Length: 173
Image (cartoon, rainbow, N blue to C red; front, side, top):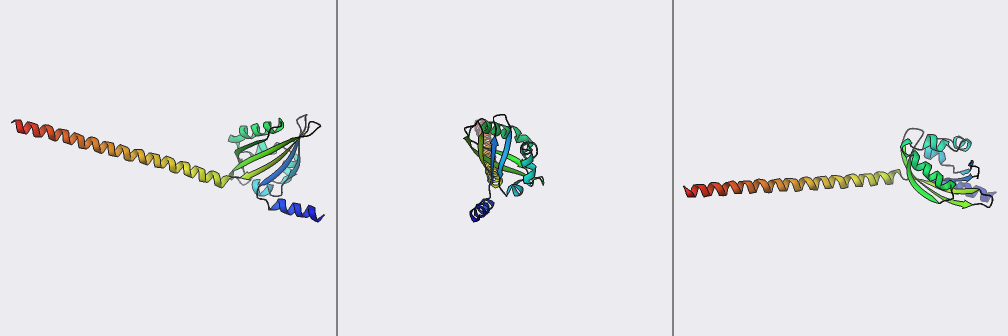
């Protein structure tokens, strides 16, 4: 009994969301395990997902990323280990990025047991986006400096050309 309590305490301390789901040959899904921190990640209760597996796809997965999540689900159902990044919408409206990684174990009776880990990667994605924006801003600024320098050279060349012609005409007269 103390080992069970120890395991539950250890699992509750993990910041990632852990889950185990069985996919049956007839297409049914049964959620076997859902980590205690599911509510913190999504704002939804265990019961909402336990009673209806598609609740994840219909209510939690961000609508624009639905196809990505469904492709991930299809890979699991066909026995393929998979990992992908997509957005979810917390019950309070916040949009979070997650990495959903799974390992599939084929059972002898055609059942596929999926062991999954969902990691909140929102901060990492924000940093990556900021880096991309900085890179774009740097490229735009660099192009602007090159354009200004080229325009400056053209203006100077035009002045020199006019000065040379005027100077030549003055000498000829």
